[in-house]
Image (cartoon, rainbow, N blue to C red; front, top):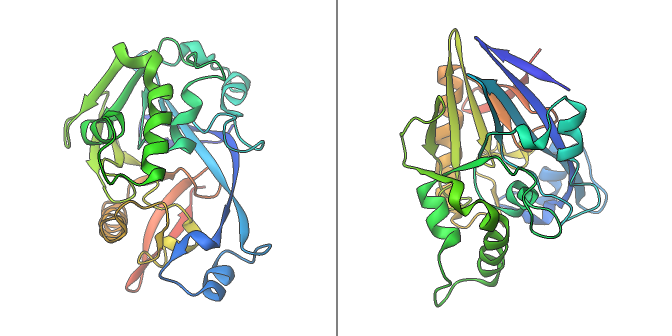
Length: 273
């Protein structure tokens, strides 16, 4: 499995599979431009990775996000097997740090029967994200929001006694949550300080990396607040380029490690190694 060393910390990239998506979801960019940026598609369809990351530190096994499970597409749901192939039993995972609670990041918390894949893990999630997805429906909620809220109830049910809700800026497990709302209300980037470096998990600040790093004004249909998502993306990319942390993107070309760099008025991505 691919890994990246950041100071005194090793981060392993362990995938859940690949996700079929579409340029139809891109907002604010001509289709021909988007198609060229991603290197061509089949009628607008393309595959992106679903990356997860593992950090072993101070006797803990910390995983960032939990993958999609087998609920979405047959090319997904590979994370538990890939963990075992990397020498990590799912039962050994002590903490799962969630960037947000969308299906391709959280449905892999449970199996088909709703039992936990990670029976000894504590779920770490921003309070804003948990409150939004774990509250009852309200009048006017879109169907997509209602559907994800119902799925969140299934995903979180076996972990309800082991949920740690952090506030923005509250350090936990050596991570500092950096709220980056828009894609979801509590979407969170996780910043890990390490001796001699720093590391940030971007989650879905960048969903289609071939487009949104160099063209951060391009939004996605899944963004609940598109204007806010654009502002968050620009702020996080600027922070990553300025501070020169290593970054790990959930949907950046596998294994997702690298650095954000400035390219004139916008940004580029340099793969690690």
